[in-house]
Image (tube, rainbow, N blue to C red):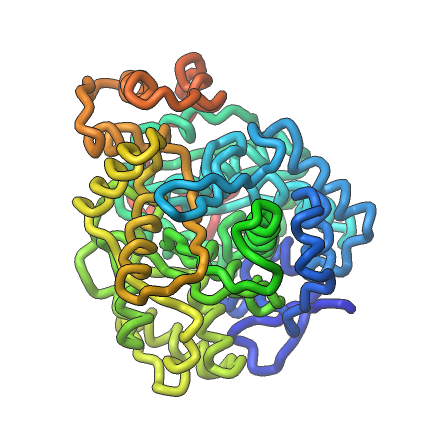
Length: 499
């Protein structure tokens, strides 16, 4: 079956192939690409416990990326998932405090974004060859902490590509920042923005939709694409690990074939949990997708009240990848709960742009039963880190702690007996200061490396290679700009002069 893609905002239903959607990233009308029909998982659930991560990735992704040949797709997958991951399982499951933890941080930048972003460069370069694209691909992305480093690690020195990453200067952890600023690769650029993630993300979208700048790019031999989860090449590889988790639970005897399970997902831009939604639509037995937020709980209010309102204080928290008030991928969910109505979807997104809020109708709200939403305060996040460490000497990062706390509250409030999987999205070494504070450990708040050493001493958690590298790699990137100057900065980096 050939799966084509349409925009969430295009009432004419025009379609593109998977490779075209990967290259474009964002639809020209500002909408996000979604499959014209969601494929079903064709293998029996019992097969999940026998498949390697690579084999499972092929079986799932060949349905979404159906214009790639078997050899093209298998080559992409084989190049993405190998010795660059510390665990041969890629995404192993461990068990703590009565819940399963899906560990997605064993890639080269110790965050869940690696699983998709180690694959995306291979998909994109294959897509470029397939479509006869001669122009240099410029990956333009905003990051709340992890996407930027993971994207650069994937695209560094990939022929025919450049990557420009914008991040909120004071909105990421010191380790996250140092990881980005030490990134090697002649085609990589990192720019600090004097604002929050939403400022960076909003301006990246404006740059994508800037007709004059895009014409300048075309003339100079460039073409924009995206490494954010608005790109289907980022989104659908994340579906794989939901199925893989189910297979591991089957193999461990934690569930029986056909049993439904819950996933608790720390959620900011809504891409990770949306991949779980697609997994359920494909046939994976998921009972609840638990949307776990931090103090920036705009999604909690949306699911519980049917109102999305970004007109609220923005908080810098210990879980910066969730410090987001405009969750881009939610647009895809709006499209589905509106009955795949692009007119209604566009109207809601236009309302968000003009007023900062929208309200969905009762019919749409009634279709959110797959989700449960709650949030954790900073204090509750710290308490969860301490409790898990006390229970079995395992250190977890603040994002994972948010998901663990909300999962525990969900179980307490609902008495739901289904097996719950906490999606563990980052290594504690990305956020050593908050983890140390939560564990009441003594430390010097000097350099990021001193914090890493203190956490290692306290927990004994093995040091990942990317953390060891921070001690020897020089700082390479030094640009900082105001949000209003992001467009000019892109032009300067690429050596073009926009009108």
